[in-house]
Each structure stands twice: as structure tokens, then as C-alpha cells.
Length: 399
Image (cartoon, rainbow, N blue to C red; front, side):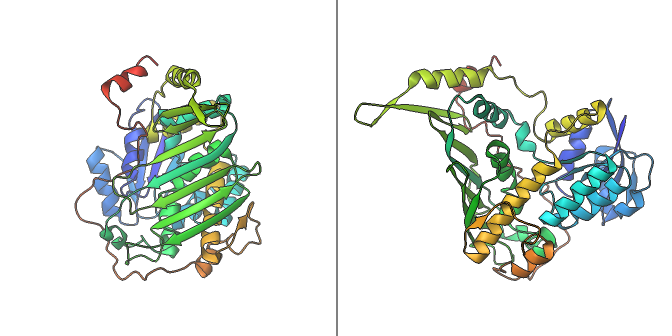
């Protein structure tokens, strides 16, 4: 039985608690922690949990009834909390983003290596069927080399979203939509295409004058083989239509799922390659569905790694790559220059202090509230299933 502590009981903690409760034979939540302990107590009562409630993670470090911690706090304290627990022999699953800087990521990985414990980072979209299937198709080589990727991390957040006390501050949130929303999609891009060689970017704040950070960014990335990716990060897009598109040598595929393929006529103009489209359609539909998806899927993966002594799908190094790509976007946007990867430890953007020193304050935060309203509903991104008609849904019904 794996015993779990949840550190931070804000909105996202519900996804963790709900996921752990799906596996009552494998794990048990033994502690909840929040700097506002009444919030932790409220969560315990909401889910009917008999747990220890603490107002500081340090009170739980030496507990012998904790094997795994889920860190669900604001990004600025991910690194410190993770290192503390790893150094005290606990396994760690940390919410996105992994940390607020590459330096903190490296400290977390070093603590993992020294302790021999597990360190994983939430990247729950890897555990959704459409994303998993796209990865499998890319691995198969059926569309050839990827030439271009389009990543649309479109979200929408109202003006009051940034009134919450820690949001919209470089010091607390670590960044804006690029770090805290597009992190999901940038992780997908890194998982599927690896580290780019060059990054250029534009950053802006167009709709939230109560936040220091960006609410819109557009980045271009170039890879060693010449392939290009464009990443739009936003919290100003109505409808939150999110997608990842890969244009290969032979075909175009995307999540939500769509496939198009062309071959050349003798004059160079395109003709639809229906045979390849059907082959890709059949392959996509033949891939098995995940038994658990999103946060539940990732937590199942982490529990399995602990039970078998294996490695989780999402490693500390994976989380670090995502932070490196995001850091490069910030550096490129702030300096109006092309940034080359990898970033070195001597880079001024390697540390939190360096990022904060160089970060542009688009506006100054003037409002800070402890909680936002009474509505608990939040959006956590697309399921990448798209708006399918009944016949389209039936096409992959026999997975």
C-alpha cells in the first residue's frame, strides 16, 4: 500500500485526490497540507478522508506513513518542496510546471539521483488516447520526417483570474500563459520532436492589466534537421480550441485526429493520397485505448513504477526539457534575439533571480485576493477528441 500526501489543496489538487481514490487497493491518502489549513481540512471533509492536516510541508518530512507526495502548490515553491521530500526519502510527483527555473530543475534531479527515489512531473495529456496515438504514428515513420509542427495552446481566462494572490507575478507564478498553460503542449512537442536548436519569440499582455506576466506569446523553433515548429500560447482565445499538428513528408496528422495526405502530379500540384490516408486511419483506430487517462492515467503510471521498481513515463529530465524550451521562449522574447539551445548554467536565465531580473513587467499587479469567488469549476484543457459526429465516433469503436 503506497501512502500519499497532497501538498497544496487548491483547484488542481482535486485531480490528484480523485485519481488516487480510483486505486483504493494500491494507495491511501494519509496527509493533506496547505498554508491555509482550513482549505486542507475542507478538502478532507469533501472527500471523506481521514488524514493528517498540516500547514507546512516541513511538518511531514519525517513522517513514516508517507511514501509519495503530490506537489500541487504554486510554481515558485515546487523546487524547494520537492528537494526537501526527496532528501527525506520520499518519492515525488510534482504538478506542471516542474519548477520556475532550470537551476531548480537541476537541484530536483540531483536530489533524486542522490536519494534513489522517484521523481515525475505531471504531463497528463501524454495519457490521452489522441496524443498517445499521434506519438505512436510518429514513431512508426508512416508519415516520414516531420517538416513542420503547429502547436495551438489556446485558453481563455477572465480578468479576475489574475486577482488571485500568487497569480500574475513573476516572483510567485514564474511566468504567464507560456509557463503555466502552454507547458502542456510544449511538453508534447518536446516528447515528440525533442530539443530544438534555435528559438525566437514575441511576448505580450493584451487583455490582463492586473498581471505582470504575458497573456499571449508566439514562438518559432528550428531543429537540427531544419524542421520548424510554431507555438502559440494564449489565455485570450475564446473557445479554448487546442491542437497539435504535424506535417510530415508523406502526410499531415493532428490531435484532435485528422489525417490528410498528398502525392505529386506530374506538374507538381497535389493529388490526394487516399490509400495512405486510409492506412493511417486504420492504424490509428487499431491502437489500444489507455485503461486510464489524464491525471488518473499518469498516477496509475507512477504507482506502477513504484510497485515494479521501474521508471515513470514522465521523468525529471522530461520536465526539465519543457522548462528549457519555455525559458528559451522568454529569453528570446525579452531580448528580441534568436536563442540557441541547450542553455548553459552560465546563462543569465538559468536561475530564478536571473529570470526575474530580466523579465518584462507588462503591467503591475494591484489586486490580490485569497480566493476567487465560489465557483469551483475550472478548465484543464482539451481531451483532443474533437467534435466528432456519430459515424466518426463509430470508426474507432473497435479498438
